[in-house]
Length: 263
Ligand code: HXC
Ligand code: NAP
Image (cartoon, rainbow, N blue to C red; front, side, top):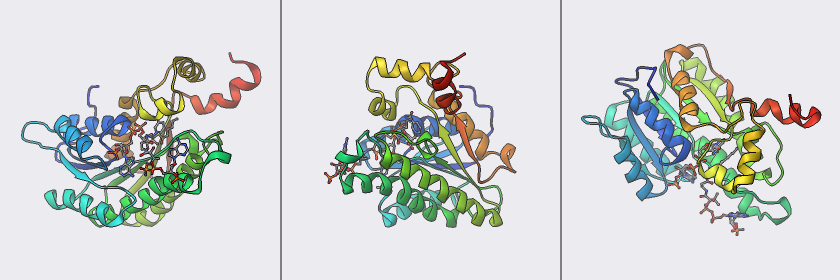
């Protein structure tokens, strides 16, 4: 994708930026000139992402942490801030999900997803805040359609992502006073990702999902990243507290096609 935004000199940290959509987001910011940092649990994934995101004279930064561990998150994000004195854009994208019927899901299964998504978002935003507090800084949460649409086998993920969006909007209220913008992005079904492999594991399921999208296909990580590049930039200087979808119209079509059978 051709970078349409200039992030030269900007410092961007992407939590969960070691695979899938978030890695695509980190790559887009790096391609636009940003100094990029990523963090997640797996040391191997962090090392591979750092190698992939580094440019000559502009090495990427990596940190290994679990978003459920507030002290480890503060150390990792603090390390990135200390290396350059500040953070300009924070992307909070770590998440856990799997399909599970409510009757079969244990309390710890529900708690694990809620802890990664909601407590994790909270820990990440709290850790980054001291390094962001100035006009122009931006925070972007990566949410999911589950935040807005009740789905079978997804009670845990729906509760978690709804919580992510509400934390995001509350912090937009508080941190707006410091000039920090805080927004959520809701990707639709994104091809070739861990999330879709879990929720639509075979060709028939993938075809069903694609057919339900008005634009007729799943999206790409680059298309999610493009919205993040906009939200992190001065072009979005009056956008805060927003929950923006990049889903090919998928969310519109849920009821729209079910009733009449489509166009
Ligand atoms: C039922 C399950 C389960 C499953 C785990 N559990 N998988 N229950 N069905 N498929 C239960 C376990 O039995 C355990 O409960 C509890 O969850 C914690 O499991 P652990 O493996 O110990 O947890 P942990 O190592 O912390 O791993 C977290 C995880 C894992 C969420 C379970 O899958 C993970 O690390 N996921 C990260 C990657 C990921 O999910 N990517 C996709 C994101 S997609 P008990 O009671 O046995 O102790 C997304 C939205 C996609 O977020 C939207 C698409 C439109
Ligand atoms: P993914 O590749 O599994 O990405 C998840 C990332 O978060 C990985 O880098 C993972 O790395 C990290 N992570 C997971 N649990 C963590 C924890 N406890 N602490 C720290 N890091 C953790 O999945 P994806 O499908 O691309 O999804 C990425 C984001 O997009 C998620 O927020 C998801 O909800 C959202 N989303 C996805 C889709 C889709 O179609 N895939 C649609 C809508 C929204 P480690 O394993 O190294 O920790």
